[in-house]
Length: 501
Image: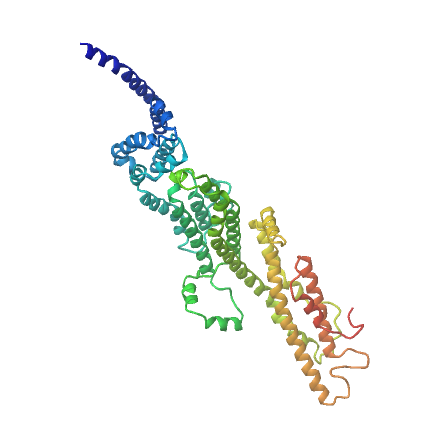
């Protein structure tokens, strides 16, 4: 009877503690709070042993060999297949985060770093990690992340619908095209706390790079090589077969200039967001090591993480810049082609206006000069409507040390000046040859002159060209262009002293 009474008296405190634990657990409304309450109660009941194991000479790892040895296998074995199932990624990520919080809380019970390291590398912890199908979870997530992009890149660029655009967050509403929207949404989501898991950092990093590269290659391949002049086209025709595979993916029909401008804007905005927002987000996420057992792995200094992330992203950032530059070249070539048309048709006609016609020396520029830069002006206005020339473009241009929207002006201006220079040289060469021919025929008067003191036909042609080029230079200055070769063009034509008005 004495033994039974002693047994009942010894069991009553234990039963009381269990009863209190059950009541506290019943108040827990979520899985994280339930596990926290359970672990807190265990730590409280084992307080004496935990403090005793902290003594350096004991060498006993009580959190690993007792607490983790009981709790983690029990959760792994009795949690059930549904608890570890990855087929609903959002729910899986929540349960996984809770489980990793439990692992981290047990680790904090370790009395020193040596026993914490032993706990992290133990078979008990490894076995618990092995219950989580992280590879399946990532594949499901990756399918979700890339689907919007893959659906968009099956065709040439398409505009976002206004209703859709208004529903997006402020940063994504900057985009004009569905493909850019899908790319940014995918890479940004890779690093959201609800998606990213520490043990999958390398896979999410690779997914980020793959999504951005897919977008850059879609843009570059769809644009194809910018249209070249005859010499460059002949050289390109003898290039490797890789260019033919790329041209097979070129968009057909070719995009309109307005669509090219939209694509250029989107690529630029995506590149800026990657550099200014995504990369810092990746660095913060990896450095913090929140969301997975990576918090318990070897510490990595923030500066080292920054260097690794920036180095890993450098290549894809350059690919985006290259795609943007290709888009700019395509726009500039198309606009310049329209600007060059009056030059190509009207500059050679100057000779016919003054050769043996008796027409008076010119006093004003030709009518065609005023129309040369009209296509450029129209597209500059279009850039302003699309938002290319504005606060964001000014910041972008400041980073490039250029005027906002100036890439279009400078690039088109350079091409037009080069073509104007070629046309002027060809005209002057024809005029010079005509003069030489007439001189050899021993004309009594200078070639084409009508009377002493009058300008010859050749000088009238030169004067007209001189006036045209000067006015063309003024028009370039009005829109802020100072392209290379402009001064050479101005210095090309020499007129008799006092002939110019």
